[in-house]
Amino acid sequence: MQIKLYLSVITFIVLSFSNLKSQNQSFSQEGTEFWVCFERNYKELPIGNDKMRLHLQLFITSSYDCNVSIDIEKIYFHKEISLKTGKLEVVDIEPTAQIVINESPQSLGVHITSGKAITVYGLNSRAQTTDTYTALPVTSLGKEYRVMSYFNSQGLLSQCAILATENNTTVTIIARVNSENSIGAGSPVSIKLMKGEVYQFCSVSSGNRIYDMNDASGKLIIDKGDLSGTFISADKNIAVFSGHQCGYVPQNIMACNHLVEQLIPTENWGKVYYAGVLKSRKSSIIRVLAGQNDSKIVINDNVEKVLNAGEYYEFEGKNNLFIIESNNPISVAQYSMGFKSDSVGDPMMMLIRPESAFQKSYRISTPKQGSWHHYVNVFAANKFLDNLKIDGKPVDKSLFRNIEGTNFYFGTIEIQYGSHFLESTEPFGISSYGFGYGNDGYDAYGNM
Image 1 (cartoon, one colour):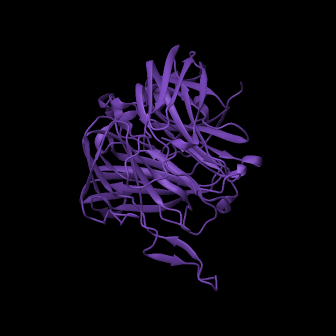
Image 2 (cartoon, rainbow, N blue to C red):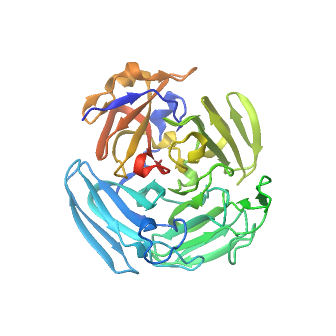
Image 3 (cartoon, helix red, strand yellow):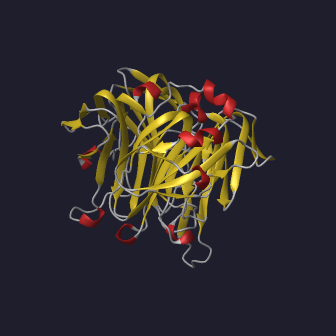
């Protein structure tokens, strides 16, 4: 397989190289036990609408031969697979695993166990509305999270799902906006979940609205109900997923796409990020979310905003590199824009991997077949580029570009569908994403 390397400004969380050795090695995407779920994608459509049929899938790969079990209690789903080293297994999940009931615990947690370490990606897809997430093993979960999502748009809602990994887990939610049912903004709400139960909630579908002033009928374009910044805490480790049923990014650009990521616990946030345009895209939307009060957001050495806990700062990154820093831990997400922005793909949401999660190797997979361009953004210190390999072949370091003022370099690798292995002698960062074309146009995905 021929692998083409392209120069690209990428988005990555990074501190100085001297801090790489002090990283928190407990945060990893590889493990032997996972709890995941599938949030609502777009709308429920009439039976027989095959074009918009829901596809839920798990993409599982490993550097070892191993046996994997997948179970979903409520729908009596059980499947066992045998993984071979370096191969990719695709597991179809029943559409009834989608969470369609809000603010009521549902036993729709997907439990994945393996005898040896595996990597798992979840895919939630309808025609022209797709996104994926990198699953985090139970060893990388935490007790505190803040939601990253996006604005409501045309009746489609910002959403979040909380999944218990242990019995009798008490979860407290302090929402930034009202929910559709019973959660009031700023008022703590506590719920109790049993192991494998999922609690999904959405922002209210009416509120601070923006209308299309060019439409005489006053057609609603965006309702700004956005769960971003919502604080979630628990007395036991939980898995949290957030995003959007089908978000327009930005608000006035067609068209929408499902958005989802598994959230990083606040204890694993970082303080310094690099952000730039995605491969083949002219620009993207970047959000910076604060977890503490008095968080000074500095972009390219300019103080742009001082945020309190749960507040975010959003900007459009155009053909440029942005160095994002803060005095406190922050979270950063990058969103690709709607198709009409530059006629490539559609929105996706991608949390950026913190420096504390950099690893010496990654087993990854592309979670979408068909007419797609798949990319991996790679970020590494210059002196280790000589040792950076993908699928056993050295990466040509002359194709990487220096990030001005640092010892770090970045590049983008275009890969084919399947499983891939990246490795180096020291920790480095990656993220992966893809854009559809042809029959799969108007679509995109992104993974932390």
